[in-house]
Amino acid sequence: MTSATARLSPVEPPSPRLVGDLVIWLLVLAELLTFGMLFIAFAFARIRERAVFSAGQATLDLSRGAINTVLLVSASWCIASSVRAVRVNDSKKGARWLLGALACGCGFLVLKSVEYLHKWQEGIDIANNSFYLLYVMLTGFHFLHATVGCIIFAVLWAPTRRGAYGADTCHALETGAVFWHMVDLLWMVLFPLVYVLR
Amino acid sequence: MKKNYLHRLDAIWLVLLAATTLTWWLGEHPDAAMGAALASVVLALAGLKGCLIILDYMELRHAPALWRRLLLGWLAFTLALVLAATLWHG
Image 1 (cartoon, one colour):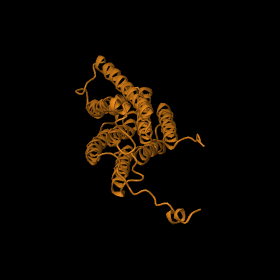
Image 2 (cartoon, one colour):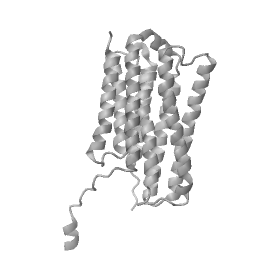
Image 3 (spheres, helix red, strand yellow):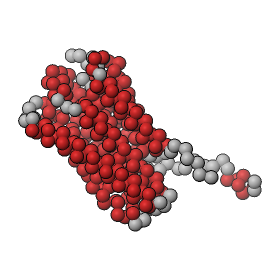
Image 4 (tube, helix red, strand yellow):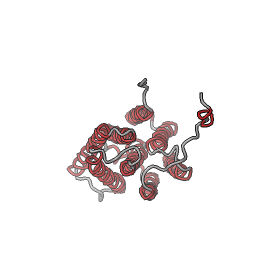
């Protein structure tokens, strides 16, 4: 061991770093507060109309909601793995993970669209009662955010594949990943609240 | 000298899948009448999943403390209010 190595140890922990653009974090904060308000409105509205909410929830497919959860967390895993690959300059692998994230995201959108279609065919819409009003608002806003997340994945794919992002230049990819993780995080509260708790 | 240990990101994905399966199972078995304990477990699982996403997928574990506290605080506050509303039999 040289004296130079000895001087360098112990290794300093990495300094705190916020990945992605600061603007995305401000957006995340705004979205969390907005959805938080809706979550709490849903939970407290249920106290006043237990029977209505219970009947409404009984028309939802819990298994489909669980599959949607699996698709969202899998997309999060894929995009996190994509960032990890790009950080070691493996662009091709990063692009493949990104495609995986896009596939899971699109799977979520398709499954949710089918759910909305079934509800519509059953003659259920936001005018039925406060359960459906809040259900459509919560899941509908979330659906729109997931759509934006998928568009971000699609936009990031080509530059990732051609190696535009690397270890020190993956700011855009990190920013897109943070947005999707927010979509995922929101569903982690939405799923038990709307589909599971009674 | 490449070691193929399960990477942290992969391990977290497996935990998220397991927690989701457990939540689904608890929801599919309403015989337990969704008592206070069951509601607490379901929301604790949501808290666990949220924490993992915030700390590891969003990489806030090694970020400035302010952002980590803001997101974890949001999660705790929201879940606490949802739990309170669920247990409230007014």
